[in-house]
Length: 169
Image (cartoon, rainbow, N blue to C red; front, side):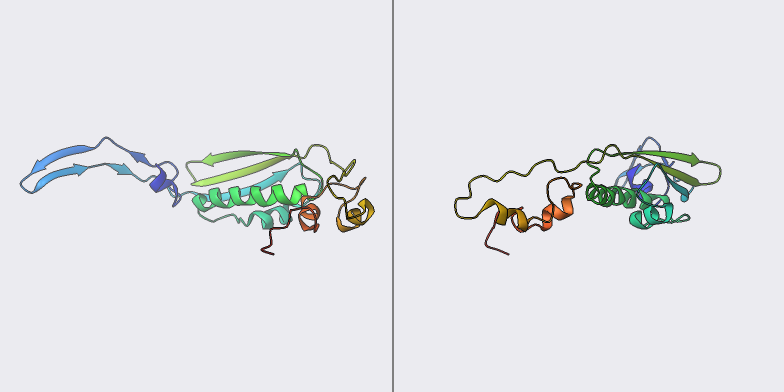
């Protein structure tokens, strides 16, 4: 149940509601068994050639011992941060597989993130079209990434001509 899962009660159970009439109205009784409070146990990362375990834990912002529910949010945010970081190193088709191991009797959830980095992409060619006033070589000097270099979303985003001017900068 989502309400109990958020604070770390991952195996909570909700029974069937019972309705009773009283002099003042209707009374609904819903039996709830919270279950055990789960905490994060061991967090591991496998197959990363770019970052150490410590660096990945810092990127994700997780620590063993914290309530497991906050881990779900942190891991989603961590995956998004990692996606951005990996794309800056040319890894555009990487995937991450999350495996959890719940130890019900201990109230511990161990988590393993297995990274499949895939190939590194580089820039083969940059083409410009529609510019009649600016020489192509001048445009090329404005990009922080060039032909033959490892692709990086960060460099592309920071290049002045990567995005059309909005007049709001």
